Image (cartoon, rainbow, N blue to C red):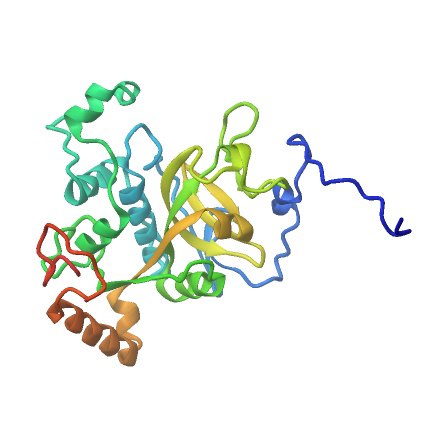
Length: 298
C-alpha cells in the first residue's frame, strides 16, 4: 500500500459555508474597480455618480428582463456622462412591446395573475430574444428612439473571456448577459442571495444551469474578484466562476459617443456592418424560412 494514500472520495454537504458568500467583507478599496459598485455608485476614475433609487424594473411579474437589462445598461451610459438616469417599469414595458409580441392592450394585467397561463397568453408575456432585441436597438430607423439612447452596433463577447467582459464594461459601459440561472442563488428562505457563486459541489443538483430560470442582466461594474449588476431591485455580486459556468450569451453595445472618440474603430465597425448587410446567407448557415439579406441582420 502506498504510504501516501489514504484520502477517501470527496464528499459534499450543501450546508457548508462558501467563501464567495463573504466577498463583500473582503473588499479592498485600493484595488482597481470600475463602473457599478456595491455602494450604489458608478466609480468612473475619479468620478462618482450615485445610482438613483428607483423602482425595480425587472423580475416584477413580467417576463421583461431583457428590456430591463437594456435600460440598466443605458443607465451606465448616462453615468459616464455624469448624469443620473433611473428607468421605470413603464419604460421597460414600452421597450418590451417594441422588441417582442408583448402587448398590454392599454392596461397591464395584475402582477399576481401573470403566472396564470391565460394571462400570459392574452398579453404574449413570454419574454424575448436578447439577440433580436439588440438588432431592434441598432436598427437604422431607430425604433427605440425616445426609449433608449441611440446605439451604433453591438459586439458579441467570446465565451469564457473575462478580459473581454472587463474591457467592454470599461470602454462601452457594460455587457448584456444571458444567464441560465440555478436554484442555488436562492437561500433557504427562497430569497435571492446578494452574492451569486458556484457551490463547492459544482454545477449539479440545485446548481444545475437553468434549473431556476433563463434570465438577462446588465453587468455594468467589476472589481478584482467580482462583477456587479442590478436585478430584482438590488445590486448582485457575481463571482468570476459563476459567469464562466452560467453565461449562455454575452454582448456589448457601442454608444456613438464612444465610437466617435475612436474614429479608427468606428470606421472599421461601420465598414464591417455594411459588408454584412450586403452579404448573402453564408454557405455554412442553415436555410431559414425568412429573408436573410439586409435589415434582419443588423
